Length: 206
Image 1 (cartoon, rainbow, N blue to C red):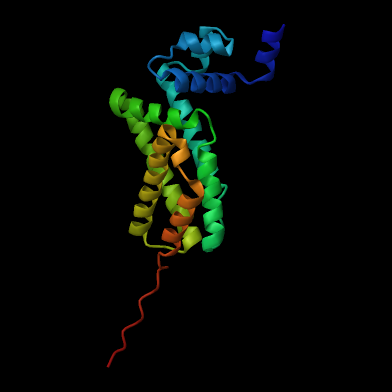
Image 2 (image 1 turned 180 degrees about the horizontal axis):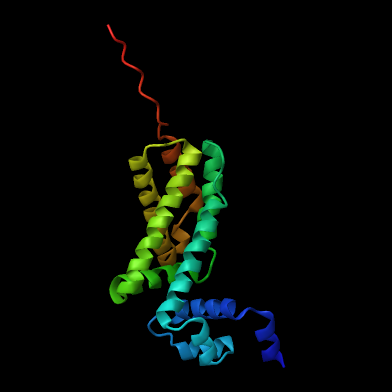
């Protein structure tokens, strides 16, 4: 049977995450029930609970995959040298890829809303993941731009994360108004204008 073939060829956890993410992006997290997910994934509720004992665990698994996908989209396109033109092209590619996913932007906002307003446990987990993401971004900035000052790197990580979140909202509201080439060019100029750390010269003793 077709249903059995689908269930055999697609790993169950992968199918659950894919279906749940799509439904939650379409309907919202609160409005999506476990019964909806089980039905769309063509599994029993018992099978769903076997893999994810609670809706919170399922939401957190979606969060993990979501942030992992975002991280891959950004870091796969970052250059390995300090070059304004190359950096601009790579940033444009990364920003565009971040918004190609039909459900990614909405899912990001729904997850944030759920974490901030509705779900204290998810908020704590989200905060940990965001901190990890900021540190990863700071690490990449350090490698590409040659910056070692940890305070500066932490600030840049937060700023770049704010840019990504802000662009997500703008793109959802008015995608035609988001000009990725121009944004990438200005962002590259801003980043490459940052001076590398220069060791202090020793003070000559009289």
